[in-house]
Length: 224
Ligand code: HEC
Image (tube, rainbow, N blue to C red):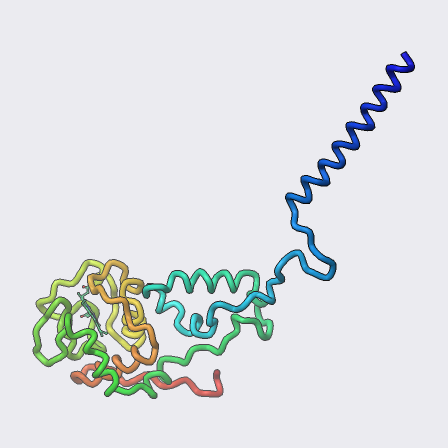
Protein backbone atom coordinates (compact mmCIF):
# COMPACT_ATOMS: atom_id res chain seq x y z
CA UNK A 1 0.00 0.00 0.00
CA UNK A 2 2.84 2.43 0.95
CA UNK A 3 4.63 1.68 -2.35
CA UNK A 4 1.48 2.36 -4.35
CA UNK A 5 0.94 5.69 -2.64
CA UNK A 6 4.58 6.63 -3.30
CA UNK A 7 4.16 5.83 -7.01
CA UNK A 8 0.94 7.84 -7.26
CA UNK A 9 2.59 10.87 -5.67
CA UNK A 10 5.56 10.50 -8.01
CA UNK A 11 3.29 10.34 -11.07
CA UNK A 12 1.43 13.41 -9.88
CA UNK A 13 4.63 15.41 -9.53
CA UNK A 14 5.88 14.26 -12.93
CA UNK A 15 2.54 15.13 -14.55
CA UNK A 16 2.53 18.57 -12.98
CA UNK A 17 6.06 19.22 -14.19
CA UNK A 18 5.17 18.23 -17.76
CA UNK A 19 2.07 20.45 -17.66
CA UNK A 20 4.02 23.49 -16.40
CA UNK A 21 6.77 23.04 -18.99
CA UNK A 22 4.38 22.59 -21.90
CA UNK A 23 2.29 25.61 -20.81
CA UNK A 24 5.45 27.70 -20.89
CA UNK A 25 6.27 26.40 -24.37
CA UNK A 26 2.74 27.16 -25.64
CA UNK A 27 2.61 30.65 -24.24
CA UNK A 28 5.91 31.42 -25.95
CA UNK A 29 4.26 30.42 -29.21
CA UNK A 30 1.16 32.47 -28.46
CA UNK A 31 2.66 35.75 -27.29
CA UNK A 32 5.53 37.74 -28.70
CA UNK A 33 8.22 38.46 -26.19
CA UNK A 34 8.84 42.14 -25.60
CA UNK A 35 12.41 43.21 -25.02
CA UNK A 36 13.12 45.40 -21.98
CA UNK A 37 12.49 49.06 -22.76
CA UNK A 38 10.19 48.24 -25.69
CA UNK A 39 6.45 48.94 -25.51
CA UNK A 40 4.17 46.01 -26.20
CA UNK A 41 1.62 48.30 -27.91
CA UNK A 42 1.64 51.29 -30.23
CA UNK A 43 0.74 54.45 -28.30
CA UNK A 44 -2.11 56.42 -29.98
CA UNK A 45 -0.24 59.72 -29.92
CA UNK A 46 2.50 58.36 -32.12
CA UNK A 47 0.16 57.30 -34.90
CA UNK A 48 0.53 59.67 -37.85
CA UNK A 49 -2.47 61.94 -38.44
CA UNK A 50 -3.99 60.73 -41.68
CA UNK A 51 -6.75 63.31 -42.12
CA UNK A 52 -6.58 67.02 -42.65
CA UNK A 53 -9.01 67.94 -39.87
CA UNK A 54 -9.23 71.57 -40.85
CA UNK A 55 -10.37 70.80 -44.37
CA UNK A 56 -12.84 68.16 -43.23
CA UNK A 57 -14.38 70.57 -40.75
CA UNK A 58 -14.48 73.47 -43.16
CA UNK A 59 -16.32 71.44 -45.77
CA UNK A 60 -18.54 69.58 -43.41
CA UNK A 61 -21.26 68.63 -44.16
CA UNK A 62 -21.71 70.10 -47.60
CA UNK A 63 -19.10 67.84 -49.16
CA UNK A 64 -20.72 64.73 -47.79
CA UNK A 65 -21.85 63.09 -50.99
CA UNK A 66 -18.79 63.65 -53.12
CA UNK A 67 -16.86 60.61 -54.40
CA UNK A 68 -14.29 59.43 -51.87
CA UNK A 69 -15.95 61.40 -49.12
CA UNK A 70 -17.05 58.28 -47.27
CA UNK A 71 -13.53 57.26 -46.37
CA UNK A 72 -12.67 60.77 -45.23
CA UNK A 73 -15.73 60.85 -43.04
CA UNK A 74 -14.85 57.50 -41.51
CA UNK A 75 -11.26 58.61 -40.94
CA UNK A 76 -12.56 61.80 -39.39
CA UNK A 77 -14.88 59.97 -37.03
CA UNK A 78 -12.10 57.57 -36.02
CA UNK A 79 -9.77 60.43 -35.31
CA UNK A 80 -12.43 62.28 -33.35
CA UNK A 81 -13.44 59.31 -31.20
CA UNK A 82 -12.88 60.18 -27.57
CA UNK A 83 -11.21 63.43 -28.45
CA UNK A 84 -14.17 65.79 -28.12
CA UNK A 85 -13.28 68.38 -25.49
CA UNK A 86 -15.65 69.05 -22.62
CA UNK A 87 -18.16 71.78 -23.49
CA UNK A 88 -16.48 75.12 -23.09
CA UNK A 89 -13.02 73.57 -22.76
CA UNK A 90 -10.32 75.48 -24.55
CA UNK A 91 -8.38 73.78 -27.32
CA UNK A 92 -9.08 70.32 -28.67
CA UNK A 93 -9.21 69.34 -32.30
CA UNK A 94 -12.91 70.17 -32.61
CA UNK A 95 -12.56 73.80 -31.59
CA UNK A 96 -11.44 74.99 -35.03
CA UNK A 97 -12.14 78.53 -36.21
CA UNK A 98 -15.83 78.90 -37.12
CA UNK A 99 -16.50 79.06 -40.85
CA UNK A 100 -17.04 82.57 -42.22
CA UNK A 101 -20.65 83.72 -42.22
CA UNK A 102 -22.57 83.94 -45.48
CA UNK A 103 -22.57 87.74 -45.49
CA UNK A 104 -18.77 87.84 -45.37
CA UNK A 105 -18.47 85.10 -47.96
CA UNK A 106 -20.79 86.95 -50.35
CA UNK A 107 -19.09 90.27 -49.71
CA UNK A 108 -15.75 88.88 -50.83
CA UNK A 109 -17.23 86.66 -53.57
CA UNK A 110 -16.45 87.38 -57.22
CA UNK A 111 -19.54 87.45 -59.45
CA UNK A 112 -17.26 87.12 -62.48
CA UNK A 113 -15.91 83.84 -61.16
CA UNK A 114 -19.51 82.78 -60.55
CA UNK A 115 -20.35 83.47 -64.18
CA UNK A 116 -17.56 81.07 -65.14
CA UNK A 117 -18.73 78.46 -62.66
CA UNK A 118 -22.29 78.30 -63.95
CA UNK A 119 -20.96 76.56 -67.03
CA UNK A 120 -21.30 73.51 -64.79
CA UNK A 121 -25.04 74.14 -64.70
CA UNK A 122 -25.62 75.04 -68.33
CA UNK A 123 -26.20 71.53 -69.59
CA UNK A 124 -29.38 71.60 -67.53
CA UNK A 125 -30.21 75.28 -66.97
CA UNK A 126 -30.69 78.33 -69.15
CA UNK A 127 -29.87 81.62 -67.42
CA UNK A 128 -31.28 84.16 -69.89
CA UNK A 129 -34.40 86.30 -69.47
CA UNK A 130 -37.41 84.50 -70.94
CA UNK A 131 -35.14 81.56 -71.76
CA UNK A 132 -36.17 77.95 -72.08
CA UNK A 133 -36.52 75.24 -69.48
CA UNK A 134 -34.04 72.47 -70.10
CA UNK A 135 -33.57 69.42 -67.88
CA UNK A 136 -33.88 71.98 -65.10
CA UNK A 137 -35.93 75.22 -64.99
CA UNK A 138 -34.79 78.57 -66.36
CA UNK A 139 -32.84 80.35 -63.64
CA UNK A 140 -33.17 84.01 -64.66
CA UNK A 141 -34.07 85.89 -61.49
CA UNK A 142 -33.98 82.77 -59.31
CA UNK A 143 -32.61 84.65 -56.27
CA UNK A 144 -35.63 85.67 -54.22
CA UNK A 145 -38.00 83.58 -56.34
CA UNK A 146 -40.39 81.15 -54.57
CA UNK A 147 -39.14 77.57 -54.73
CA UNK A 148 -40.51 75.47 -57.62
CA UNK A 149 -42.40 78.39 -59.15
CA UNK A 150 -41.07 78.75 -62.69
CA UNK A 151 -43.91 78.44 -65.19
CA UNK A 152 -43.91 75.46 -67.48
CA UNK A 153 -41.45 73.34 -65.54
CA UNK A 154 -42.49 70.00 -64.04
CA UNK A 155 -40.82 70.04 -60.63
CA UNK A 156 -40.35 66.87 -58.63
CA UNK A 157 -42.75 66.32 -55.70
CA UNK A 158 -39.73 66.73 -53.42
CA UNK A 159 -38.97 70.19 -54.78
CA UNK A 160 -42.62 71.20 -54.67
CA UNK A 161 -42.68 70.22 -51.00
CA UNK A 162 -39.55 72.27 -50.28
CA UNK A 163 -41.19 75.43 -49.04
CA UNK A 164 -39.97 79.00 -48.98
CA UNK A 165 -38.08 81.01 -51.55
CA UNK A 166 -34.55 80.96 -52.91
CA UNK A 167 -32.97 83.44 -50.55
CA UNK A 168 -29.22 83.47 -50.03
CA UNK A 169 -29.18 80.94 -47.20
CA UNK A 170 -31.47 78.52 -49.03
CA UNK A 171 -29.42 78.67 -52.23
CA UNK A 172 -26.16 78.34 -50.33
CA UNK A 173 -27.39 75.19 -48.60
CA UNK A 174 -29.02 73.67 -51.70
CA UNK A 175 -26.08 74.22 -54.04
CA UNK A 176 -23.70 72.66 -51.50
CA UNK A 177 -25.52 69.35 -51.68
CA UNK A 178 -28.82 69.34 -53.60
CA UNK A 179 -29.67 65.72 -52.80
CA UNK A 180 -29.15 66.20 -49.08
CA UNK A 181 -31.01 69.48 -48.74
CA UNK A 182 -33.93 68.38 -50.94
CA UNK A 183 -33.99 64.58 -50.68
CA UNK A 184 -35.62 63.19 -53.82
CA UNK A 185 -34.88 66.20 -56.02
CA UNK A 186 -34.39 65.38 -59.68
CA UNK A 187 -31.47 67.79 -59.91
CA UNK A 188 -28.74 65.17 -60.21
CA UNK A 189 -25.76 67.33 -59.38
CA UNK A 190 -23.31 66.53 -56.57
CA UNK A 191 -23.04 70.14 -55.46
CA UNK A 192 -20.33 72.77 -55.26
CA UNK A 193 -18.04 71.70 -52.46
CA UNK A 194 -16.20 74.95 -51.85
CA UNK A 195 -18.22 77.62 -50.00
CA UNK A 196 -16.34 80.27 -52.03
CA UNK A 197 -17.59 78.75 -55.30
CA UNK A 198 -21.17 78.68 -54.05
CA UNK A 199 -20.94 82.28 -52.91
CA UNK A 200 -19.55 83.34 -56.30
CA UNK A 201 -22.31 81.54 -58.19
CA UNK A 202 -25.02 83.02 -55.96
CA UNK A 203 -23.58 86.51 -56.26
CA UNK A 204 -23.70 86.16 -60.03
CA UNK A 205 -27.24 84.74 -59.97
CA UNK A 206 -28.33 87.80 -57.97
CA UNK A 207 -27.33 90.02 -60.91
CA UNK A 208 -29.85 88.26 -63.18
CA UNK A 209 -33.10 90.19 -62.91
CA UNK A 210 -34.30 92.65 -60.32
CA UNK A 211 -35.97 90.39 -57.76
CA UNK A 212 -32.90 89.58 -55.66
CA UNK A 213 -33.05 90.87 -52.08
CA UNK A 214 -30.07 92.90 -50.81
CA UNK A 215 -27.01 90.83 -49.92
CA UNK A 216 -26.88 89.81 -46.23
CA UNK A 217 -24.61 91.96 -44.09
CA UNK A 218 -21.25 90.46 -43.11
CA UNK A 219 -21.13 89.68 -39.40
CA UNK A 220 -18.99 92.06 -37.38
CA UNK A 221 -15.40 90.80 -36.98
CA UNK A 222 -15.57 91.50 -33.25
CA UNK A 223 -18.39 88.99 -32.86
CA UNK A 224 -16.17 86.15 -34.11
C1 HEC B 1 -27.87 67.39 -64.33
C2 HEC B 1 -28.70 68.54 -64.54
C3 HEC B 1 -28.52 69.72 -63.59
C4 HEC B 1 -27.38 70.40 -63.29
C5 HEC B 1 -25.96 70.11 -63.77
C6 HEC B 1 -27.77 71.47 -62.44
N1 HEC B 1 -29.12 71.44 -62.20
FE1 HEC B 1 -30.19 72.73 -61.04
N2 HEC B 1 -31.87 71.67 -61.39
C7 HEC B 1 -31.95 70.56 -62.21
C8 HEC B 1 -33.28 70.02 -62.13
C9 HEC B 1 -33.79 68.79 -62.88
C10 HEC B 1 -34.00 70.86 -61.25
C11 HEC B 1 -35.43 70.66 -60.77
C12 HEC B 1 -35.32 69.88 -59.49
C13 HEC B 1 -36.61 69.25 -58.97
O1 HEC B 1 -37.68 69.56 -59.46
O2 HEC B 1 -36.47 68.43 -58.06
C14 HEC B 1 -33.08 71.88 -60.80
C15 HEC B 1 -33.41 72.89 -59.92
C16 HEC B 1 -32.56 73.92 -59.55
C17 HEC B 1 -32.94 75.04 -58.71
C18 HEC B 1 -34.32 75.29 -58.13
C19 HEC B 1 -35.08 76.13 -59.14
C20 HEC B 1 -36.50 76.48 -58.78
O3 HEC B 1 -37.13 77.09 -59.62
O4 HEC B 1 -36.98 76.14 -57.69
C21 HEC B 1 -31.83 75.82 -58.62
C22 HEC B 1 -31.72 77.11 -57.83
C23 HEC B 1 -30.79 75.20 -59.37
N3 HEC B 1 -31.26 74.04 -59.93
C24 HEC B 1 -29.52 75.72 -59.52
C25 HEC B 1 -28.48 75.07 -60.16
C26 HEC B 1 -27.14 75.59 -60.27
C27 HEC B 1 -26.69 76.96 -59.78
C28 HEC B 1 -26.39 74.66 -60.92
C29 HEC B 1 -24.90 74.69 -61.23
C30 HEC B 1 -24.02 74.97 -60.13
C31 HEC B 1 -27.28 73.55 -61.24
N4 HEC B 1 -28.54 73.84 -60.77
C32 HEC B 1 -26.90 72.41 -61.92
C33 HEC B 1 -30.94 70.00 -62.96
C34 HEC B 1 -29.61 70.39 -62.90
